[in-house]
Length: 113
Image (cartoon, rainbow, N blue to C red; front, side, top):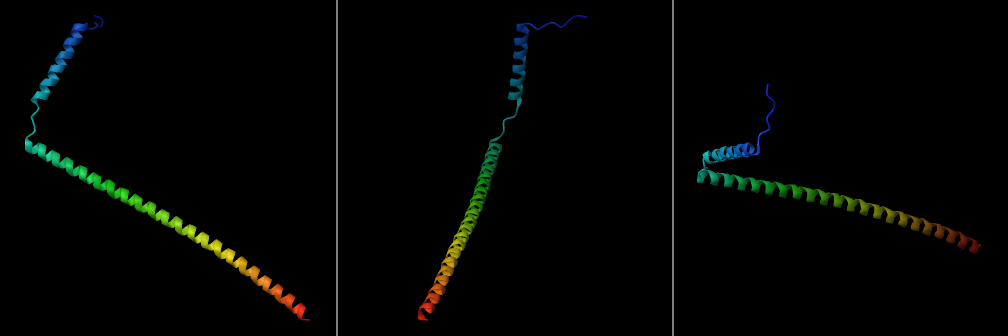
């Protein structure tokens, strides 16, 4: 049995040229699409691009609406916290004023005796 014979450079270049020729022949043998087919493909591609653009726009609008809703909820929470803090401060001031009024009333009663 004979061993493996390494192909020479000329054999490799000839094989590459044959492969190139067969690929070119296959490409030339392929039928050329008609103008109607080309127009149909272009229309389909344009419709797909339009649908994709509309889908992206809808997705962007939904994302912006979600962000706006989150911002509104955050603002409402901040407003509620601020109002609660203000109510707490007002209650403390009222309690202090009531305590001062009671203290002043006791002082006036002592002074009146």
